Image (tube, rainbow, N blue to C red; front, side, top):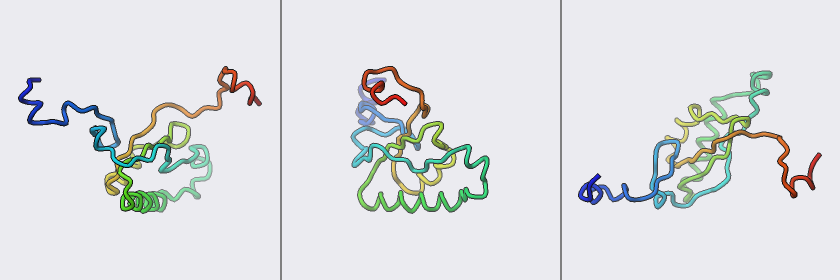
Length: 125
């Protein structure tokens, strides 16, 4: 990429962070909530008791909450709902797009595996 192209697109020189709706310059993240869960759910609960999971109502409530956060000045949130806690990006993407909030999603797994560290051993079960 040549210098002239970078002058036309100054964001190209800025560090980017990946969000649900695409890459965003870090300078554009704005006020950010760092540890949130838009929806946390147990996959086992939904599979065994599907009658208690009203997805349209849950998504409607999520949209209302995200929209309220946006109107109160929140620009970005980090959703730490990983696999095992109900992470479902395709389900949330339309809600996030409608709300106007930028959402950075976590990767990884939620596990109860015991970690071998001095601090963890003090709290072993």
